[in-house]
Length: 64
Image (cartoon, rainbow, N blue to C red; front, side):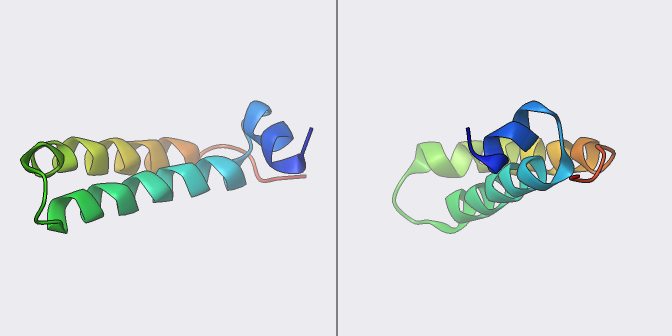
């Protein structure tokens, strides 16, 4: 099992912050794309979920 997945399962900050940041980037991309109305409509919720997740994860302990 890789170190990333071990730290993910042990609720360490690094991997979870990476996932939360990816959600925020995905939400912003969904907001700025001109192709799908569904993606545009759901972009706020994805960005909000990533932001709330980042706030919660920032309280997790650092990696060993």
